[in-house]
Length: 189
Image 1: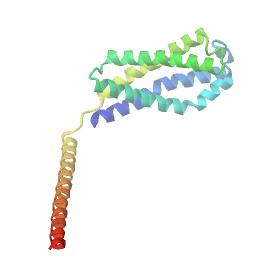
Image 2: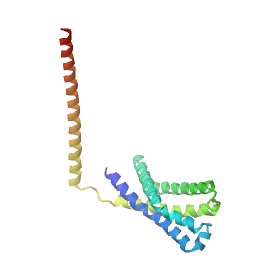
Image 3: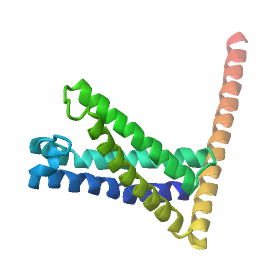
Image 4: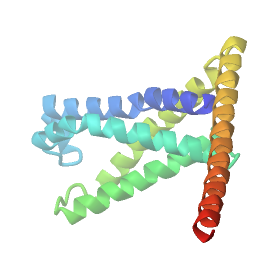
């Protein structure tokens, strides 16, 4: 339970870095049109990207949480493995961007310079996100003894309720079986 909370909070903080890079890039393209000429991005495309920032933030939070949980489940969660996983994710994002650009007929987005710009920005953004994720996930305080004892009481209470329900069900089954046998004996007799 504690790991999930740590991973979720770390994912919330880690997503801020790549999203901030996206916002800075879009605002610079809108305010400085020459910046958009580098990859032939129109200012209205940057405006659309700004509108989609909340969705990008949510996507980064979900993906970073899932990566952390998966690496934790596989017992390979470390700084180096996390950096490699985020590096692979940034390569995937650059390939996906180029493929979608080509699919939608956006020739400038499907170009090699655009691929390397997206790859570079995503490597910087996701690399920083990995470092932030690791720092936040490993620096959260451990639960106090009082909190641990409370969780243990709740767990024991749930187990006791579950066992009482199972016993009640078994008792009902026995009573129902006994009632059926008596009714059968009365019916036969």
